[in-house]
Length: 120
Image (tube, rainbow, N blue to C red; front, side, top):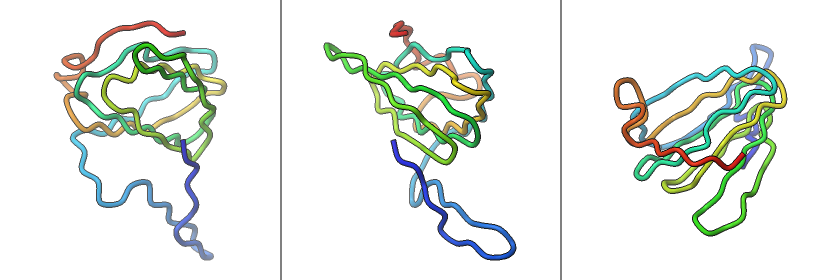
């Protein structure tokens, strides 16, 4: 997980680069209410980038035969979920996230590379 710093700021506001020189196939906004859980799955081929627009979430993740680990994500933080990493989100506050995907993860392909595995 990484919390991003502003690239530029003046009296008009600021600029915050989320990614630079990256390719992705799909972008999604996910809004989740405090206390809810999402995820509990993995992707065989898809890489998923999570950027927290507002709120706080606890991110749980696990690789095969490893212990489940967690990190707290806050506004302007992001992380990259690689293929085969089981992951889940538990929302500490009402949270809005931007999810960028490299692979099958949007529209009619949303479930094609999703495999359920409960970790929380």
